[in-house]
Image (cartoon, rainbow, N blue to C red; front, side, top):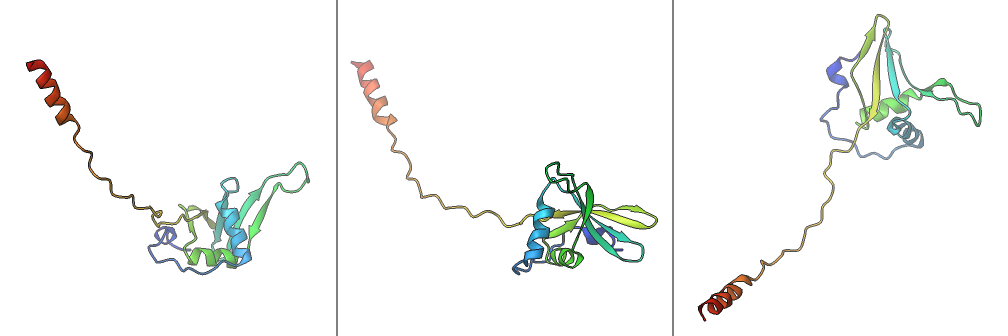
Amino acid sequence: MPPADASRISDAPRRHVPLTRAEADVLRIVSDASHPVFVTVHANGRQRYSYWRPLDSATGKGGCYVALPTAECDQLRATGRISLGEPVSDPSRTTYRVRAVRSRTAPARLQAAPVSPPVPATVPVLAARRRARAA
C-alpha cells in the first residue's frame, strides 16, 4: 500500500507518449465528473479501479460497478495523467479517489503590438483658454 505522500501529484516530468485507445477511453471516463472513479488497494496488494455506472432507463443497462483495466490505469498514473486523492482506510483495504491531472503549462499568449504614447492635446487647449480669459 503506497504512503499518502506518494499518492499526490509528483513533480516528475510528464512523458509525452501517445495514448493507446484503451488508455484514452479510461482517461475520458476519469475526466468525466459525473462518473467518480476510485481505486481500491486490498491488504494483499491487489488493486481495482472502478466507477459506478448509473442505470440507463432507455437501455435498462447499468446500476452496477464497472471495473477499469488495471494495466492502463497504472500506465496513466505512471505517466502523470491521473492522480490519487486522500486515502480512506479500513482494516482490509484502502480506497483513493482517482482524478485526471490538468496540464500545468501556461496558456500561450500573443504579444500585443507596442502602443505609442498619446499626443498631449491638452496643452494647446489650455493655452487657448488662457488667451480667451485674458482677452
